[in-house]
Image 1 (tube, rainbow, N blue to C red):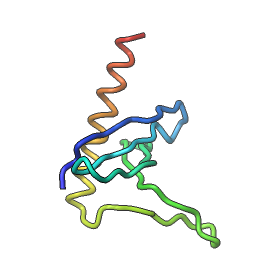
Image 2 (image 1 turned 180 degrees about the vertical axis):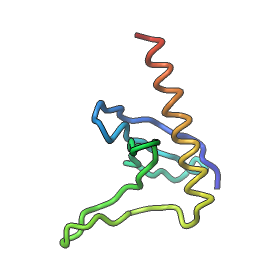
Image 3 (image 1 turned 90 degrees about the horizontal axis):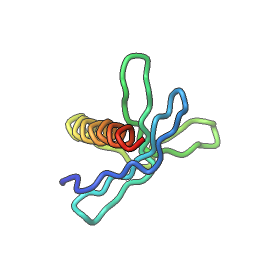
Length: 91
């Protein structure tokens, strides 16, 4: 499965949540609302989730193995950083 498109849909100025992303796989399946989160020492991605009646958050969609999670995170953060650079050059 290939990541064929990554769209940074919203960049926030929130302290923790940095952006909201949509990722397309094989030009035929998209996952919306992946979040880029600023952790204590690095950025990471959080999968789309919903709140349960017990006030817990459960992922709606997520990678099954660490290899895919790392691939997604690397590609998403690469796109995020390049978008920030492009935006700063335009301003």
